[in-house]
Image: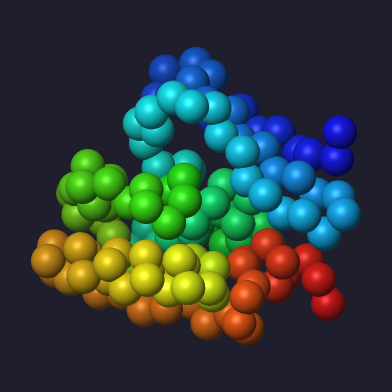
Length: 142
């Protein structure tokens, strides 16, 4: 109880992962099944010249529900895999707004993501959030 659960489908439409986030008691923990992640969340965003790259599914959904359809996500701070970078580089994307959490792990991961993107000649910048916030907290808590 107190958790939302989102099925994650592969390119064929089959559910291959579940994402959950506790939404009660101010505890915002993320939960995934212990299976490999095979794609970024919302690969449709790669048809845009600019994407907002989020650290989690809920952050991606929050941006999307606020009109930012070019939001896509990975599955945690250590999940921007080389094949995701190649997928981004082979798409129409020219610029990535890195919308990771503004905490130690998110900032370190954002720095690493920027380095990886630069190697592929993709510009990036950081989505500025107050210290300690993620996109979902920032946009849903006045």
